[in-house]
Length: 239
Image (cartoon, rainbow, N blue to C red):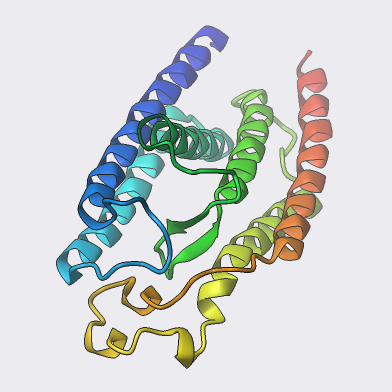
């Protein structure tokens, strides 16, 4: 069983690496079209069709990650673990390919549009990289547990901490967009609502709320420590 699980994990990692490359390839083409001098803020005008296509591509990406996780796992915990693993490997590969081909980001603190759903996520590249590393650690701990266990992996406290940490971390990326005032919004945005990024054509990010991000990371770390001891208990119980 362990050999089979190991094989599934290796295949899922390979799939995620390939998917990360495909994601990076699409972005490379888009940057050649819209940012021939290199990506930077403020954002350039993007055709509504391309903007909607990009939004739907992100929906498709999540569907693919969820689907491969459901196929790979045999219970809810393992499926969740495989989703965390595939998402993090995909995202890490994406930034690695951009660095190798475009030599971007220039640093870990370079600003990026991280995601578009439900609104643009804005933050330094370091943010998602840190979260990806944490997700890999959590996925490893969860995948160590037997498929059939009498002990629940998550306690109410560890699950609450994990969810709270994820929400706070994500909000740190959403904060800049949600805090935009009328002076920072493109005047033509109301006339071009089909373009998801149309209201960022006058916006240059300057401050990232690290206090929110670090608070979220600390909550996730506390949850991870609790999960570690719980999975250790489960493994010992099976011996």
